[in-house]
Length: 160
Image 1 (tube, rainbow, N blue to C red):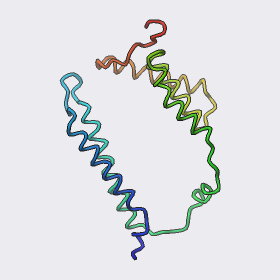
Image 2 (image 1 turned 90 degrees about the vertical axis):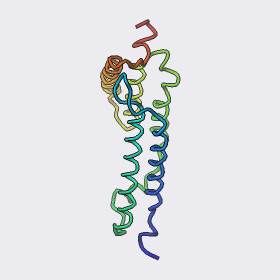
Image 3 (image 1 turned 30 degrees about the horizontal axis):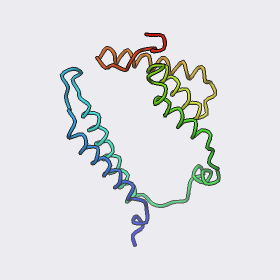
Image 4 (image 1 turned 60 degrees about the vertical axis):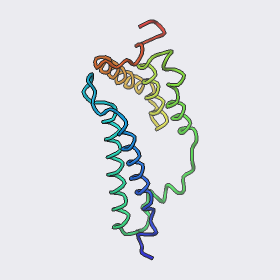
């Protein structure tokens, strides 16, 4: 049996199939819009094309690369144990818009998500991370608002 057949080349094939599914889904979406110029189908199409390209590259790399010994980082990964707290922190942060978006608004919710995920990745500068998230989310809110996209009230609790 060929050496490359023992590798997980099927992952690349699965990614190509997923990209094809995205492209199929984008065919039913509008590619162009009279308001913003580009429609929602453009982004879905770009993601589908990107997935297909990544899958093809992955399959190609699986067929041509030689199997060598594991690198030191890979060896260390086998010895480390799973720490559930960062994983749960990230999941809670990413799920928080379900509860928070309508009550505290997009900017604060996005800032909390940013701070929560950075904390899960090891940052301990929570206030600084929250402020970075707030600046980015307020900027996004105003940009989308200028494009005519309604992300809800700025701070619904106080009527803004």
